[in-house]
Length: 436
Image 1 (cartoon, rainbow, N blue to C red):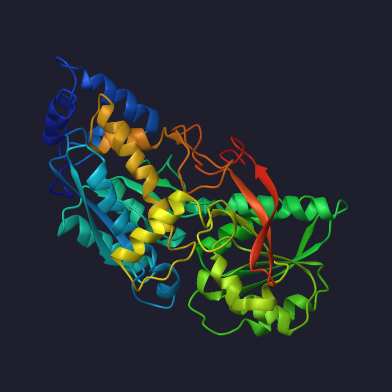
Image 2 (cartoon, rainbow, N blue to C red):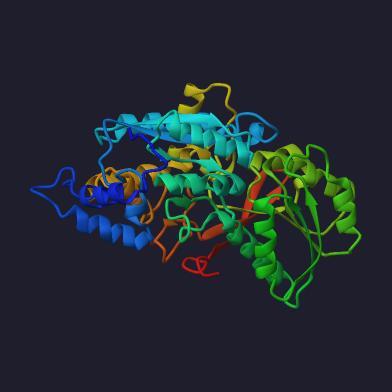
């Protein structure tokens, strides 16, 4: 476990760091490996200034590696996203039992209520009081944006920040944070590609979006990929709103738009679909991928015909119900936390740490070893198939050259009579999302 100090930026200490930080031989190698050269190359590839780090980021971890995580355990979004927490704890327990790395990764969780200020406070406490060596699984664009600065100042990796927002994925300025989930830019690009395929000459589109950083990122990307179609009207819904967005839908429907795109928070998906049905609006309908498949069930007939993108195996229905990896994950979650409902969101607790675990295995075999810089370098150059991603969807990063891990996803359509999602098309933009 590292001890954090915020003000070790003096010239003498910086010089001492440069002399000693990169001098240790890598674990498991024969003789003395030139770690200084390896560290310098790895840091340069990520735009990291080793001299600015207040601790030795090349120092191997001890037998116990403390990993911090903030999760919405309270607040209006907690019922929808809080289920990730228990699943993530179980995923870490299993990894510790099977990794064979000789180090125990201890997950320390804290409540952020899905608000940026509480995420920052919780993260600062995890650093200063709990002494975490790494961070993982901070959820939400605003929360990731709130904590990446303090983590960067301490040279503590966030692997990953669970954010699809473009504004949270900025490794050029925040090289110690890497994002992982389906990007809102990919979601928006697929929506608009489908709309323009169905309306070759373009059409009028209305957009409802959450009034937060994630929602604003969505709107920006929808405008970017609109093509011949035109966004004629937008309405916002506050992220903490628990009621139906009736006035917003009324305003959007009055435009006569042929297409509705809804980008609410996870807790607002069902009520949005129900409101559209209540008003009898028969537009082509697209829903943000933040909505778990079970929210469509809650909406019932009102969800029929809505389109949504997905890149994760659905544990609740369809072809992946009997998938061995899915079955094993569900069984272990139920055993560890019997009261945790099983949804596609719950399985995020098993999915989001997969790159973290993969990076730990890669780092342990690398010249940099299991260290902060070793983990950061390994994570940002991963190219592998997480077992919970759908076929055709890979996790692939290449440092600053490719900053978007997920660049393919399926557009699906919900059928309320069968409660199944029909795969309409796989859209693959590999290598195209980093530069837009």
